[in-house]
Image 1 (cartoon, rainbow, N blue to C red):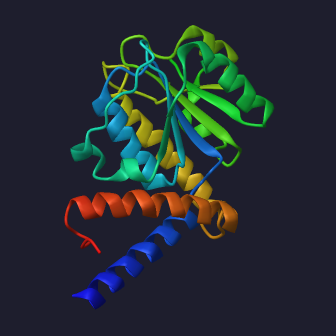
Image 2 (cartoon, rainbow, N blue to C red):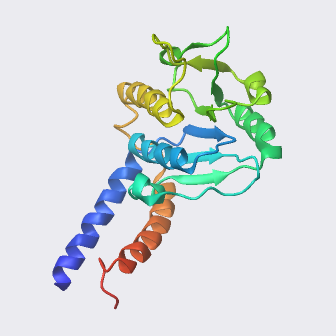
Length: 215
């Protein structure tokens, strides 16, 4: 039994090393005034699937949203989610632009282009809004690019979690074709630091479920 646990733990460490080698630190997601914790959880799961390291979000009441573990299926442990204060979101995005990020905003307007026409191999932060009001006008005004998902039916929008998945997998396709999955994008030091935090939280979670025996 002890040997099985040691082997299982090493397999887990090897899997974490593999995941960190495929993280895309310059592809980020921001949700503006997100209402639905279910949508946040679903988008977290997609972020994990495509290698996004950071998911930022704002809420109208400046309170954290809960995570639905039945939706994330554990993905919330591998993506760093950070709530940005509503009054700080413009300054936050402007600072990202100063660091060379393009701010890509989903919004239906005349200057919008198809989400497929964006070069996601550049440092990018994708901003999406809630389904009622969309992205705030202040953020739209500072966007480098405004995108839409072409719609051929009567309805002119998708559920935000579905839209996020489409956009992120287009970004993932471009990054894969550019060879970004072939070489780690995080330094060894960055990977080791992240792994240390992940292993600590992962061991606590697995012990609480009885998957790792207490010493």
